[in-house]
Image (cartoon, rainbow, N blue to C red):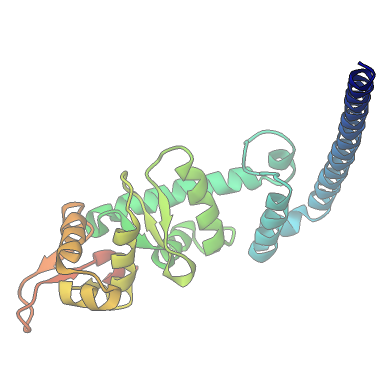
Length: 246
């Protein structure tokens, strides 16, 4: 009976100790969370002061604007989230990207009958600058990518395919999977055209897979079939990749 009493007391004592440790742990966690919240608030305030001080450079200097966007993203601040509030009133960056997005839509719609809704980022950039005129605010390819990513959030059918210098812009509804993108990138490296043999060699695919993807791109209007090649092979041309911006 005595041993049972000692055991029960030890268990009760351990439970009380555990409860105190848990309570202390919760207090420390709450303190750390509050400290982190204070740090983020201070950083946010400093970012607003920085933006106010350098607003003209953010508006006019594309490189500086891109770096500012990256700095904002690091703490979860999105200057483009709303057309109202501090960022829009102080910098006008929200309105700037909405304007770029609308102009990108206009260019893509105008060229869609020719390219099936796929255009290189380089060509879109060239056409957009031409439409804005020589007195328009400078726009970089990074600005266009940012604007299009915002358009995608609205389910507009716009998306960025690929990366780096190989970026392409999709402006038609419907998802293109990795196979479609791989074929487009392969055609981009081969002067805008591919055939099944070229795909099988460059991507190590089997014939059925290549044929299926190419036929899908033809149905979507993104590729044209050429059966009149001197080598008697069926080639698939991508007008978005061989038409020069005029």
